[in-house]
Amino acid sequence: MAAAYFFSRFTTFPFLFSLALLCGFSLAGDPSVSYVFEVSYITASPLGVPQQVIAINGKFPGPVINVTTNYNVDVNVFNRLDEPFLFTWNGIEMRGESWQDGVLGTNCPIPPNWNFTYSFQVKDQIGSFFYFPSLNLQRASGGFGPIIINNRDRIPIPFNEPDGEISFMIGDWYTQNHTALRGVLDSGEELGMPDGVLINGKGPYKYTSSVPDGIQYETINVDPGKTYRIRVHNVGTSTSLNFRIQNHKMLLVETEGHYNLQTNFTDFDIHVGQSYSFLVTMDQNASSDYYIVASARFVNETAWQRVTGVGVLHYSNSKGQASGPLPVPATDVSQLWSVMNQQRAIKQNTTASGARPNPQGSYHYGEINITDTYILRSTPPTKINGSVHATLNGISFLNPSTPMRLADKHKVNGVYKLDFPERPADNIPPRLESSIINATYKGFIQIIFQNNDTKVQSFHIDGYSFYVVAMDFGNWTEDKKGSYNNWDAASRSTVEVYPGAWTAVLLSLDNAGVWNIRVQNLDRWYLGQETYMRIINPEENGSTEMDQPGNALYCGALKSMQKDQIHSSATSILNGKWNLVFSLVMVLLALVPVFFC
Image (spheres, rainbow, N blue to C red):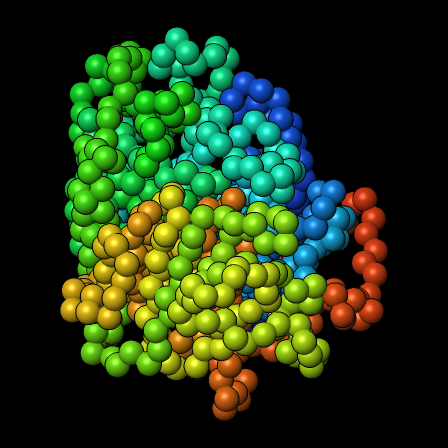
């Protein structure tokens, strides 16, 4: 009856025309969703100290982007900060759309009080990801939120449908904001111990008398006997964290968009920039609540106890509060071999379908000949021209004022060099360069992340997932290829590299564009530990890389091409309302074939 009333109100010619199109051709293309993100400062006190944080639509952390494989996504971003801003989409491959990547090598920053709409497709992807600000340590002040890409209905997930979903954004946190932290790094100092660890933007439950009164902590409400899919993202500044739920097993099922062989853990190390999802069954008694813990790893854990993040898992029939000592990790960081073995245990579920209806193991990466090898070595920060910088292969990346892909499009010469060295050279002093990798389209390469720094680092490649085929201590040599996992290695976009160790990954260069390779630890990234791969299809016919978007911003050598943006005070509100109206209309139109066709 409600449907009949609705359609009786819309009998105009445009509606009938839309009805005819929908009945004749069904919905054209892949579904679209749109979001409006207003980025601004708010005052919050996650650790009991009022401070400036970056919020999205007034929320910290920001809202979830919840879509399904192949959806087209528009995110209209209004920058209300007092400095330029960019979002990047951690783990989203953006096939042929490096224009939307949201890093300085591909995008001009959004100036204060301007807006920019990112438009991309989550093509052939599923899984758990997150978005965050990519400029100038801004992530250390917030601005992050989860991304969920669901399987299409016809592609089964390799486990029973969970009773619910829970997202955790965990990360180390400083009571100084990102501008103050930049000042610390610019002075040549290390950031030092953080002031705490947040769970979903909140401080620790008062599990000990040393935790101040009045801190808001995260409480997760669950029902006994139910199983929940728990997605966990380390969005912190630079600290590896161990995540655990007291007395509950965590069944690992997915790593950054790929299903795993299901393995139970009592606790799990999640390094900066990494995302995982677990199944957790609420199978304990309800005599009390249970601790949710995120604690620092690979540091002096006794000294760092005060920065532990603690939340509460609350059964609906719980009879009391959580109390007593926190659970401890099963592995001891002084035994690095055993810690590394936890990560080595992550294997791909080769029989499960991913985003497409075929087994994830149907792509036999181990049978492909390697065309190039790149060894990317990180070392402790060093002085270059009187300032402290971090390097890869002796080069601290200098971001050009004109994004590289924009320079290519408009034939601006001299912006960057295609001479990034394939291997480190000890006889050349460290230097500042806009030097990137000239990669070969359709090549199949191995990258060795060699960590000669003193701290655990996470490395990420935009636009790609790669196979983590080996990790070990010492320096990588050619004979290490004999130890590679060439069958069921985990495929992911961010991988940890332990100090004094290396990690080897394999990837097929089938995504044209200019793609960022970076350390996810914000301190080292800010100091220059990144580069890019330029991957150009020599026979480009418009199908492998999207053209420059019509709304591209211009800066640097091309700033004269930028037109002014004019906004009224109500612009963002009106845009938000129109996006809501558009979304509702699309939903209602999608129902038309059900009633009339």
